[in-house]
Length: 188
Image (cartoon, one colour):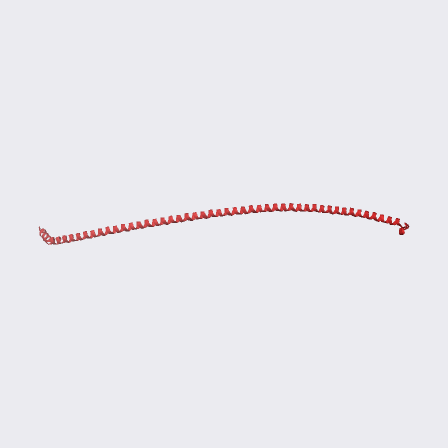
């Protein structure tokens, strides 16, 4: 008991202090609760902001991926267009070469036909020259025969005329001889 009274006294003085302390603890508890609630709200807001940032980042990644995919589609379309144009140019080049070859073949064919025509003309001209030469030979032979015939005829006429003149002269000489000198028949 000896300890009891001092304890009781201590308890009497300590009870209001404990009560005060309890109130202070309750106030501290309320403050801690308010602080915890504020922290929870702040954490919830931070979590919402983090989710919003994560959603925005995910949306940004989706948009970036869509943009990359669009650029890839555009690049693929451009590559396909370029390939199609290259094929078209290659086809046009091939067609141009075919046309050039066809034109070249036609030129060669025309040259061949022209060469054949020139050769035929040369043959015809050679035949005409040969025929003209033959005609000239025939004409020369005819002219020679005509000249020879004329010469023979002239010679025959001249011979006949010479013979006639001879006969006439012989006859005249005989007549003259026979008539003599002054018609007496005495002349030589």
